[in-house]
Amino acid sequence: MSRLNKAWKEVGNVHRRFCKKLMGVPNCAANEFAEIELGRESRRGKSTVKYWYQIMCLDIEDTVKQCYEWQKGNKSARRWIMKLKQKL
Image 1: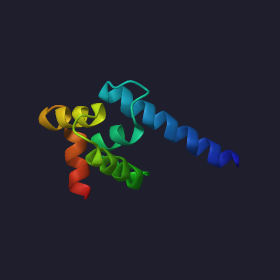
Image 2 (image 1 turned 90 degrees about the horizontal axis):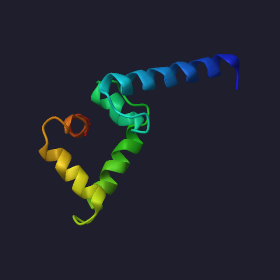
Image 3 (image 1 turned 90 degrees about the vertical axis):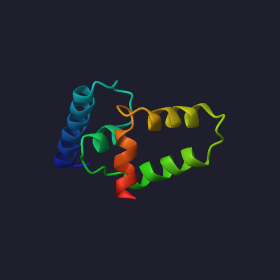
Image 4 (image 1 turned 135 degrees about the vertical axis):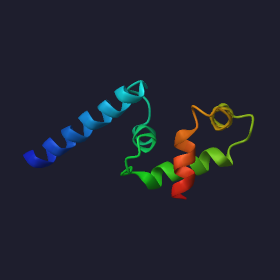
């Protein structure tokens, strides 16, 4: 990897950390959701849609599905869901 590529990768890392800090989410939160929430086009939009589709296919008893349903009903927590829906 060239020096320039390494530098741009580091710029991306700093930007993602900034987005998460701005939103007040932990560093372990998914990068795509922080970027979508702030209106930045995610580089991995397809993988985000795939993940969302997997959540939709889960049984309602699954904990991940229950968290998604809770976020859908909570106006302050559902912005990423609405932005993803607009993109679809």
